[in-house]
Amino acid sequence: MTTGQENQLKGFDLIHKGKIRDIYRYKSNEILIITSDRISAFDFVFNDEIDGKGKILTSLTKYWFRQTKDIIKNHLIDEIPKLENQLLDRAMLAHEARVIPYEAVVRGYLTGSAWNEYQSNQTIGGVNVESGYKEFDALVNPAFTPTTKANIGDKDKPVTFKQMENNLGEDLARQIREYSIKLFEFARNSYKKKGVILVDTKFEFGLDADNKLMLVDEIFTPDCSRFWMKDDVDNKVYNPYDKQIFRNYLLEMNWDNEQMKLSEDIKNKLIDNYEKIYNKIANA
Image (cartoon, rainbow, N blue to C red; front, side, top):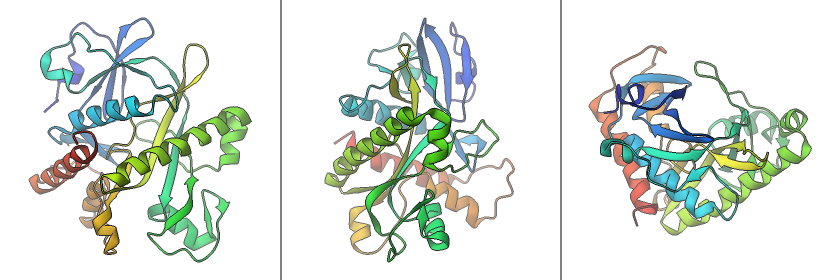
C-alpha cells in the first residue's frame, strides 16, 4: 500500500498531486514522479487502493518510453533516483515540461463512446466516417479524438481537432496528432505480436525548456489504454484487460459517486489483469 507515503516523502517538495501520481521537485528542471496504488474512474479518486498497481504502471511506462524514444522525445531521465528502496519500483525521474492541456486519444476499434457517436452521427471525433461499421470493428485508419485535460473533480470533454487546432495553433496540433498516431501504430504492432490487441489509448504531451514537443506522463498502460486478447477477439469475445474492468464494476452496482470500500474480488481481478498485460510485453 502507498497510503501516506506519497504525502510524506522526506526531503522533497510536493509540487503537484494528481489522481494517481504525485510529483516532487528533484533538481532544477527535474521532477520525481511517484505512482501510487490509487485508482480513479469517471474522474473520481477512490480512497481504497490496488496493491502493486503503481509498480506495474511505472514499469510499463519506462519500458515504452525507452521503446519509443526514437519516434519522439519523452521526459524520462533513465537514472535511479536516491530514494528508499520500497519507493524505487514506483519512482521515475523526468524532465519538467509545460503540459499541454489536452489528452490525445487514438482509437483503433469502434467501441465505447466512439461507437455511440458513430451510431448517432456516423462520425468519430466529429469527423465523418464511412458507413458499414459494426461495434468492435477495427477501423481502417486509427481515429484521433482529443479531449480537454480536466482538473481533479472535473470531467474531460471531447473536442474536435479543429477546436484543438484553433487553441494550440495549426503546427503544434498537427504534430500532436501525427506523433499520437505513429506511437499508437508502433505499440499496436508490438502488442499484436504478443497476442494482445491495443484497442485505444491516450497520450499527454508537453513542451520542454526549448519549447520542443515531448511525450509525458504514462503510455500504453492498462490505466490509459484498453486491451483485448487476440484469442478472445478471434472468437468474438471482447473482455477488457484494463481499467474498463473497474468502470464496468461500478456501472453494474449503480455506484452513487461516493467513496466506497472495494471488494477483494475486484481488486484481485484488476491486479491480475494488469499483471497479464505487463507480463505479455515488458516481462517477456
